Amino acid sequence: MIEPENVGVKNDLTPPNPWRFANIEKHQDSKNNPETLEAELHVDVFSRAFSSPGALGDKVMPTQKSIFRKCSIYNFLKNHRKKCGFRYFALLFLVVLYTLFGATIFYFIEGTHEKAILKVHEQNLDDLLNHLADDLSSDVNNPNVTFTKQAMKDYIRKAYIDLQKQESQYKWSTYYKLEDPENNMKWTFSSAFFFSMNVYTTTGYGAISAETIFGQSFTMLYAFCFVPLTSVVLRDLGQLLLVKFTWVYAHASICVRKLCKSKNLAGDQIQIQMPVKCCMGIFAIYLLFCTTFVYIYDALSGPKWSDGLPYFTAFYFSFISLTTIGLGDVMPNNQPYSPLISILFFIGMAVVRVVNRSTFIAVENGVFGIMTLVERKIDQKFPPRIEISEASFDSDAELEDQRRQNLKSRPISEFLKSNEDIYGGGFGQVNLRAADLKQLRFRTTFRSVSETIPRNVH
Image (cartoon, rainbow, N blue to C red; front, side, top):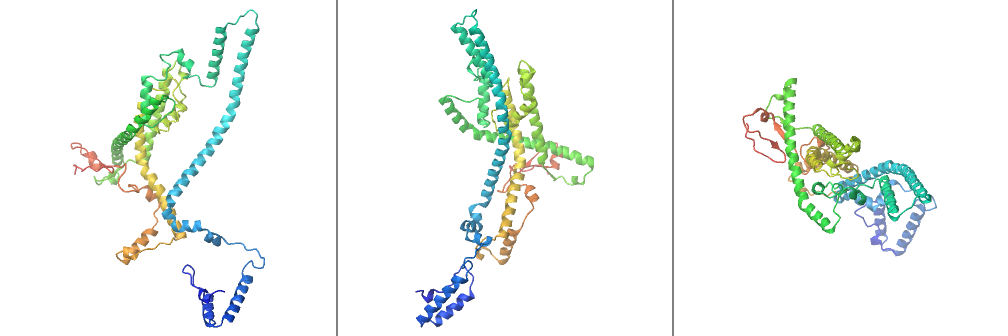
């Protein structure tokens, strides 16, 4: 038996229902008559059962709104997405999506090439094996030729070397090193110098590496001690180059404005910054310089000019090295472990830092600006349940200002043009005044966002 006191109890999470309150009054009137109350409840349950949708066998299609309401995960994410870190999940999803995109492209390009080149390699190996078999059978079946054990050993060795050359695995093999032990050994002082720089610059080609337990242990200790210091050195060197490049750009900009008679020369306190396009241009110029140097240096080091790397391969090797990707699939043919090349790339990493320090703010603010706008659009579409304590605000005016600030949307261009990073503070900006370029008799001063230096020039 249902107790009349529990019928029509109000739920705080549902809106008030007039029918239920009417039933409450009705049950309260008939509280003293149990038979009447039982009959009313029986009729009410019976009528509800046969008047509800789908009671008589009709198909009921749930609406999209009802599906989402029943989904507890959806409601939880809608109301607590900021606590769960919507921005982090979105960025991680972007990384996964970009990875799947790259995997698809590489699979179709390189997978198709691998299947096509496999048939070519198989045909080349079959031709080589047929040639070796013909030579062996002709010599064995010739009664005028007598085979000794040493002759057979030499023949097998030659066949083994030919097979390795066919598979491009002869270089750095045992027989390759035995041809010229003085010059064909992998570990020399120059190659050790090359390997040391690759360890603390985290390039890691993989073409040369420690093979002993002691060598591998020392590699870990060597990298652990000096990799952080290398990052500091490259960061500081990149800041120095950024200052120098900004100085040159400021001079060129002032000269161009004078020739064009621009009105922007009215004040000496104009802030001049090198745009991102110039930084990208500097990186492109240095990349082409490294490519040309590797191409010529490798070609001159070999017996023939054609023995060096092709120009596009040298460009690929330079890009992989400057960006510290270091796949190790391509190395110079004649100078694979040259210290001169490693020093050239070390300086280039500082140039890459110039690009990174100049573009990082724009990229970061652009990405997080987009995420902020997306979150605000979601807040407008699905406003979360937020309990705001008015005691935290001094007045109603502050509460209204806070509400307007939350609903304010900034264009993406404003995020990209912002000079400060989203975490506050300065990062990788060099500002020069026009007065700094004019006062040649005083010591030139710089104003960097990353380090504040008092100006002596007024």
